[in-house]
Length: 242
Length: 360
Image (tube, rainbow over all chains, first blue to last red; front, side, top):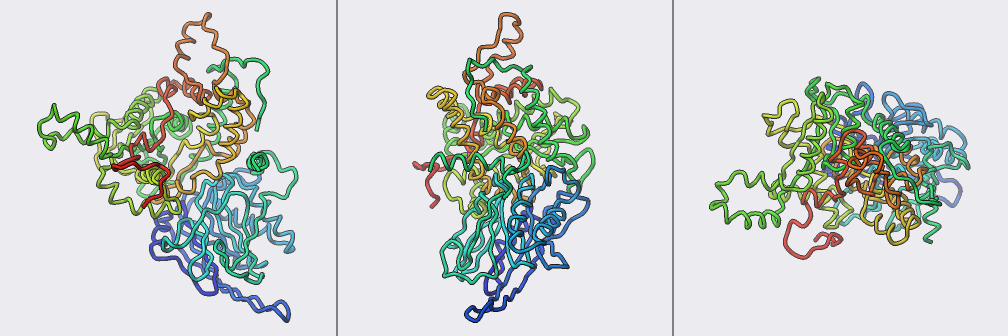
């Protein structure tokens, strides 16, 4: 199993030492930190320039391929980042041989390599083409977006929370003191933070960052065995009880 | 999901029903994805170290996974069976009181400690299923790892388990998390089928991949309430209950389980929760998954047939029949038992706590 920590704030926000050591228990083969400072210039005369500090930590338990594939993965060309905790058994019904993290990263990079609007649908389609358990954080540096998600059955842990200073965190485990509110990332879709968006007034659940939900798939008739075939009963059930 | 109800009484399920054969092969495929090509763990010794271990209560679902794994991975690779049992002070006190009339000095009875663990429900079914696996697959090295956790050790790790399972925080969460946490540690007394006479006291499994039977109860109607729904509202009620279970899978406590199970640098895999397998079970009509409301098997023609089917419960009947096909005659008849009662992690202290109470 691997471990993930991600934070976004106006300052560099690492996890507590205890959290970090627990993440290393999950992934004893490798632990690396990657930080990004993203400045977004003012869009017009009334808006302010934005400054974001992103922290990515991945610990790895190596179970795929012939050597340890270190994480977080960083794409040299675009500076996009992936923290992956999962097992992609199949992508678009093709069995994944060897290390899955590399292939998932390539899949994600390709999905967002188009215009800003298309990239959103493309990305959620890419995620729903994966068969297997997962939790991940993906930073699309080109479009200044952060995506995070868990598979629709929730087989991997992923929590989100806001600390006292308003930093938003996504982590395999609760980080910080017990007073920090963490909750399970829900299993209904892919979540996205747009770094170009002006921060809102702070709220308890996501701090100053607005989180958008993308449905699992934008395709109207997904291929058989597609993740949507599983979420269907979920939606039907919602309709029945609401 | 297949919501159809039968127009006439469905025929009985038997080991020869086509759907049972297909179920076995579908489960096998899901399992193969998860246990083929597992890399060698650190300090691996070929023929001695295990790459795969099963979270093993000795119940139907996990034993079926162990048995099917045997058909997939090389015969010279041992498979570890991780079985947890806890010293529960409330149960132990009752046992000691009952025994004290026979035994004068408790401290001079070294066997009493072992008795406590060996009397745990999951230990007893675990031993029995271990024997059945050895009988049906004698060429495999099966290693039964008896993970015995004294109360003092439970207490020593309790804060750690609470920290890991957060934000879950009820008594029931803790008793389940505790059992999973120590099971995944994989450290105990090892009984190997290759050498039944000796045991290894400080054994720790080398396996980094653990298998869990979770999901079978939801997909194949394994809970008591499935029978209740059927007797109350027939096939409609049963289907509604299964539908509710399946729709809730994503909101279940897999996140909590993952946080405690992964603490020991191992990964748990869930063959019953494979997307393709789940999608298939949802397409199959309900009367090919469990035995509620089925016609009685025709026993007049073949007496053996009726003996084979005696005592096979309606809950998860399709999986029970797969077990029967594979020669697991005792395992096919095991009842559902929640881990916190099987391993005795529930209600360790005095007082009237309920499972849903928040931890203080």
